[in-house]
Amino acid sequence: MKISDVVSGLPAAWLTPEPDHEALTAREINSGYACDLLSLVIAGVKRDEAWFTILNSVNVVAVAVLADCPLVVLTEGVVMDPEVVARAADKGVWVVSTKLSTYRACVRLNALIEADDKA
Image 1 (cartoon, rainbow, N blue to C red):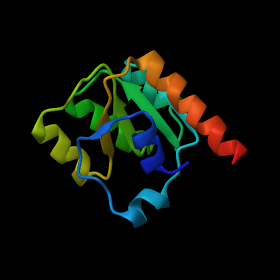
Image 2 (image 1 turned 180 degrees about the horizontal axis):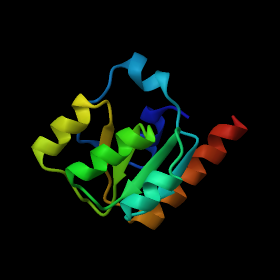
Image 3 (image 1 turned 120 degrees about the horizontal axis):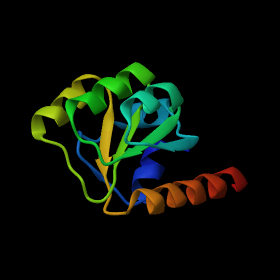
Image 4 (image 1 turned 135 degrees about the vertical axis):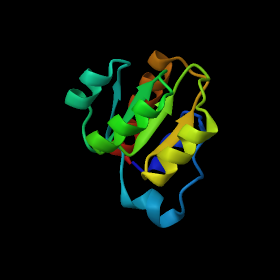
């Protein structure tokens, strides 16, 4: 599933600048990972998963880069400081924010993926 489909389907708002079409189609999201403990995220998130969290520090960007996680979804309406958003953009990590709870966002992603698999 394309990253843009995930963002619109949640729904979520871009915090980093919205990538161009080529960047959006270069990576797919095939699952999600929800966790707020950075050491577990490093060990658990997979390459083509969206990471759902309420954490919003620069450490989130570092972990996303280390884990090769292309999309961080901040839940509960959490946002990042502009400096952290700029760092994420510089490192090629896309960050969005949704007002959904972490649980609801994960359930929504699962439904989107299942619908995409049937198409």
